[in-house]
Length: 534
Image (cartoon, helix red, strand yellow):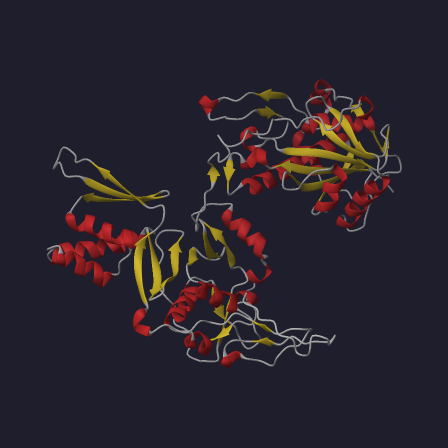
């Protein structure tokens, strides 16, 4: 932001004013005063001469051209254009194809492409082949459309999927109609450039000129009128048409709402939820996704088991183990447990006992064995086996216990060591215990202060070392699976389980002594004795 500060009075005066000037006369409102200086918001630069603005096509960054030797049939060399998972075999390397690709590397529009082909001696059929190749490259998402002027490139739109239409929407006819950026639009840095994206769009706008960034910023808040956009020149009008066509902006109604604000489904989506939902699955975007092992060769993967968090013997609490042979023989049938499972937001007068806590964790969450790396099977990290399923056998989830009332176990905060089946006492801080229990009480609609609170965290590098774009989504799935294991185990044992939908990340981080970016809190689960029957 460009700011110019000016005192409204002498330097000795203690009360001064700020006047905020809106740059376009068509949108200028009354000056706003709030202190000691005058601030000017960034203004739209003067519109360039109309004849200096043009659009053209260019092969997108990361697009490669593969040259293959000729086959046995005709011996002619062949070209294949590739980007990400898309490939288009051009076939025999005709001079027209090579010329078109050469021009598109630097950037070219249809008339200049046809003119260049004609200058090289191409006939009408070869020129048509060049233009058809451009159509195919657009269809596969291999090219960007660029707005440029005398001062250089202004912006570009880049398809993040194939079979998209490079259409542009006309601006509303009413000059006082107002456009606004979508609340789902995201301005960020990508490949060293400022880009605008949205989970509602399969397009990416690359911003090459500060004037384009100013236009986008002006479309936030109250937005811009069509008149103001037209005053900014043809480049701004073209970019605004792109934003409309790409679902990155829209026209607001008389009540100041975009269509997405009143849509019965979209209006209830939060920005971060929709972005996560779209980016953690394939389709509609070109961000890296899946088991690409981005950490391999850069940092070591975290071990399968978190190192001990305490060193003093008096802080280690061995846990009783469940008799699995008796459990297999005497437990109720599986389907009966599934049918009986439900959340219980009440606990009995008698607290849960240490032997029940030990049996519960042994049956649901203990470490059965470590699994060493096996590169021949694409297992490049140490894994493990436990009673509940986990993608890639990563088992990034850690379990912490806040003991409020448990027979045989002191009040405090503990970490569960699944390999040695024991608890590590981290804190006896009564204030922290009370705060965690109180947070759980509020999350449970103020129905019960749990006897025992299980807090789940995710050691994210266990997942992000392997997965791109989906690590947090995988961690959420794992937490849900562990919730279910807790529910079934508690139901089988005659305990009162209840998964919670929310927690306080900063409180958990302080209580346990972790950095959320390293080990992110991801879930809470209440456990206690069954309440007495009336």
